[in-house]
Image 1 (tube, rainbow, N blue to C red):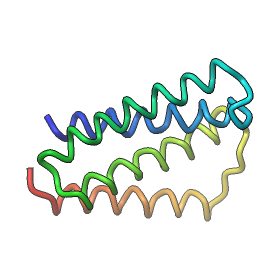
Image 2 (image 1 turned 180 degrees about the vertical axis):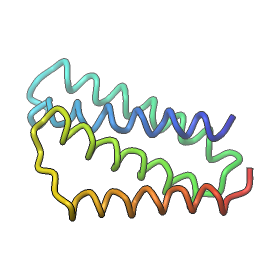
Image 3 (image 1 turned 90 degrees about the vertical axis):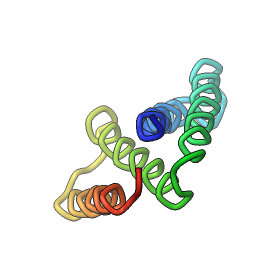
Length: 106
């Protein structure tokens, strides 16, 4: 159950990062509210996952899902540049996440 909570916490991190970008520095109400709600929910799910997962594992997976997801959203929906170097960097993050999961109990 901890891994499921952690996965959804990571997805919500993507949501709040995207909404924060759309808030234009918290000057737009709806994206600002989405940011705050998604942050609280993400932190809440992360805290549930940390009840049984090691701190380093949980935090690395959470931030990794958020980083990879934000990268993908940026490329797919915001016209951000994609290059071999950026793809390689994303692949390295993903491989680190897979290794962390394989090396973790639970």
